[in-house]
Length: 198
Image (cartoon, rainbow, N blue to C red; front, side, top):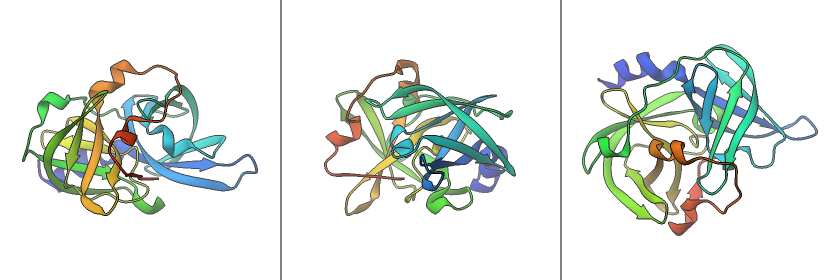
């Protein structure tokens, strides 16, 4: 698929997360991907500093409820109050060096957009391989999706290396099957020094 076709098909399954403090003020924003009809996935670091989060997707705002917070993998699964169109799930085995990919997210707390690039490497850390890509991402993109050209979600956009704008990383969707509620510093800390997209 082209970027236009990709965004037309799956742009509506990626939304913006608004995180609110105990006082009700906006504490931060990030992105999230629909992986079920009432389920989204985002990065746990997106939710830091807040006590409540809403999903804005299309023209709707939906309340969220945290289901699983795996801080070790930096993945949080949340249930939403509305109905979503889930994306098809792929695997890190679907990508290798120079494979074209698309990143869909809501950088800067703005509208959902799509960018394109390639996979440059699979970077090995303790938990497994994270996906390094040249697809452009920026603050607010954390929790957004990395897709193959056939429309499958293969990664959750999470961080970049400081000072190296084209070294952007996505956590593989394979890790969704390993999620459990637990504390941890996050696997990205092994890529020194990381900059998180929230």
